[in-house]
Image (cartoon, rainbow, N blue to C red; front, side):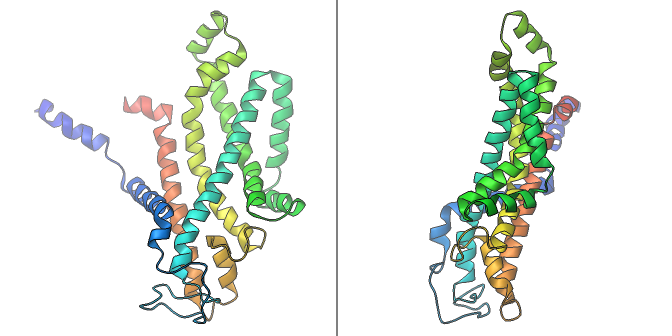
Length: 284
């Protein structure tokens, strides 16, 4: 009997939780819409019309905005742009935080102190305030926003890299590599780095939705992309002043942003739990 029920027990143990499955479906839909956007838009998202602030109907399923744009078409086009901005900012944060911290940790205490003092300085300011100050110091635009968000979130990758690096450096395989004559840099790049990739990927999945939300805030404040670019944040900013006349134009991107953030947060939390070594040991 125990042999017969063993496969069923394994299926139950490996079953994807409902919330995780919901997050995976949301993320899959977002990626699908981002990839197939031009094929899914019923109208040109940049085309003006005299039919301004119209409610949802047969011709415009989600209505039109204050300039006659089809809200659904701009929402679909904004999915790709918002994901690109969020992913770009998260990649910049990963590159800066992980790369600088690994270099600092490889070259000893003095370099480590200097680099992590820089990250502590960034952490002293809330992310949105740092991003606003960064963009204000340069020319507002898409690249400035991505760089600002990337730099503001880089300390999170730096801290997780340092914590995981120290954990791995205490493992027996690192001691064995040192006995065999491997340098500190070689140990970091060859032995430790492959073992911290999981933690970095998990952190990336957690930071990505936060970058999307902050990009929307920056666009709402007029410091992001140009007004005609249909990102979710820009759509919210443009439609806010016409909330009474066209509530659908502001509710659509807000709901899209909320659902996307919820789905990515669920996937990020599932990845965090999946890469947790303590949970893997318990499951084993």
